[in-house]
Image (cartoon, rainbow, N blue to C red; front, side, top):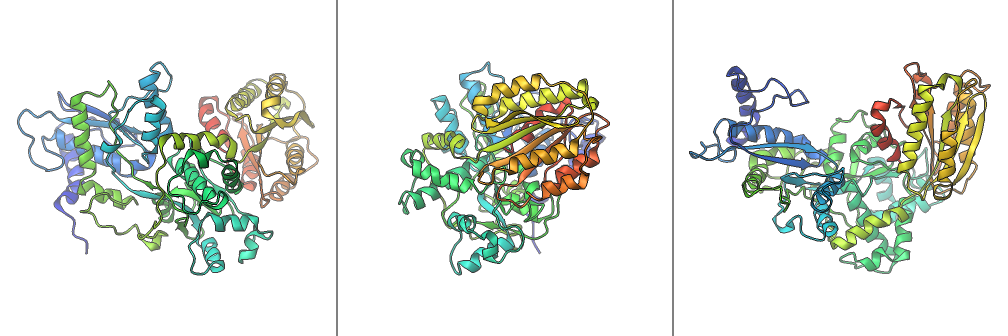
Length: 591
């Protein structure tokens, strides 16, 4: 039986007791946490500090902030548990989660472009990995962060979350050998794909990762891909530290592109990919995640219950540790008092009581007082003895160059905008659909290809598929010119768009149809089942056709649009103008 320290008991038991006592005394606000938790009142004359932290840290950090604030509110030192010395000011911490790349850019802007719309001025910044701290210093041309004084608070290696059946098949082909990128590419390049490895069903390989301008997992994964490509394609098997020479080498870049060809689609955040891969091997074979995310999935905490166990592949070529540093910006908005208070909170998060919570959330603790134990366990698909090969963090200019290379090495997309212009879309519905389509184009990288089709009684090719760089304005002009009228041949038009995209059998691009419609068919000679069958016929292709329906109007035919989404493993999105920003983020992130 595990024996908890008095501090651990304090974190678990004292917090609710203090909440009850505070409420009884009338000294706590009745609401305001936003998630049903009570807000600890700020003591008079408290030193206020703020933190922006990576979304996954919320599993333990929100409770840690509550307990820290409660301790001070009750005149106690949160680390020692003793009474505060007379005259010592309390500390009060508040915080929010945010994507590491976006938050980093906001902090850089606060220093060099304070009038920018994205400005952040936290007392503490806790990204998933210190790559972002180095990039911030590089972008600003000065030290915004002291990397030597930004201690780790939780550890997690980046892994490839792969289905156990897939990893077993790879290991059977390579008995006794470690598995890595070379072996995954072996499946891609095998004419029979997974079938050659004894896996029935879909033979092609589906991979996913996030956006390296936003996601920590993505930037670490992309750097790791450059390391792997340099070792195999630039005759540099003993490469110790990635340099600009490798990143700018066309042969190395081509090797990274070959890895990216495994991609089914992208996503902006790891949060979405945790749900995507949990749908099972038919959706994705493997995805880049932090180890704690894999544990989270295997614990059954996602929307979908995984049909088999995911296991962590620690690539033989090497991976990175994410250390979740606590970094205090060297900005003029942080006072000396706040800096001292931030260090106190950092020490608290690194203390045994919080580190025990860090472990329970699936991270590896940084405190030597908390031994590694469950859930860092084989039963949840991870190996406490891994990773054995850790990659050296490149210099900041190299990390920036890897990020810039993204536009050239990522898998490009062929996208059809399919807009319903039938009479039922007249007025507000079509106006909203046109506005959404134009806003989507504003976010689309020029390397992609785009087409515009519209439909009412029949489908019309308004602008044929072509480079967005060259035909983007034509597409915008055509969208602005759309008018509503006629019946709705939805089934026929979706089938026609699928057939149009599938005609190019040599394409090595993501293929997608963005359908903007109210979904009510009134004119097709094809049935709903015919439409679903046409989409399903492409589902197991090397580059499956993704159909992403966007529903307009309170009378939208959701069952039909859901059938379309389900048949291509996507989801119906709401065309509500109040959520257009979220809509664009979700759709744009696929590409």
